Amino acid sequence: MTDRHAELDAAIERVIAAAREHLAAVKAANGRADDDEVWRAYVELNNASNSYDELLLDEFGEVTPWDVEAIDPEEADRQFGVGIVDGAEAEDPHPRVISVRQRRDYRVPSVGALLAVAEAARRANPGDGDSAAVETVGEAVLELMQAGDGSLGALDIPELESLDGVVIVAEVETPLDPETYEDNDGAGPFALSAADRVVDRLDEHAFVDVDDELAEGEDEDEVSGQAAADEAADRR
Image (cartoon, rainbow, N blue to C red; front, top):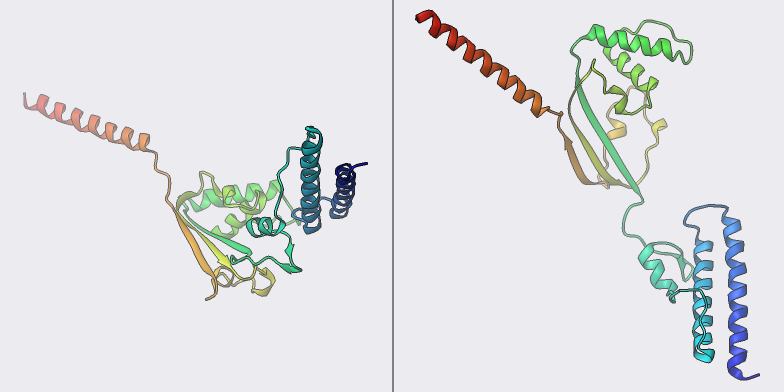
């Protein structure tokens, strides 16, 4: 057996060992995303396969079905922010928590109509058995959101006229812990600290139906034109 053949035998054994290590890491991770051990085992298997493929090509002019390129583990960790380099976590200059804060205002054309639809939602979804009448606008809005999916989309109803809104996206140091605020604290959970940074703000403007506005303008023109014609007929 030539030295070249011995190298090939050793290379295929490294592929087999790396494949076993990769499978063991995948089983241990049990579906956990971005697992460091799976990542390192993947890189080892990739590079072992690449080395064997190149040796096989050089010695016999044959190739494997593995179309892979060599991976520099340290460079890949720096680019993709995963894995551990030299026993230390890869540095990431960006905060790990993003905070999205939204405000939307609504006009209530008819308080009675809003209370009625909220009471109907309460009857349809009794929850904890509360069957008392809905008495305030705030209670009605809360009832509608609880009866829906909990988002502002539950308030897209004819009984509420959507006004302008704003969305704030910020990088924050610590995630929100709702339990640290009193139930009647409406400002604390939304306040940014000095260390937090606003990334961007999106202003939301109430939707205006241009076709409806044009139609209203045309109706006004028709009325004005008819009035002018009637006035001219009277003069004649």
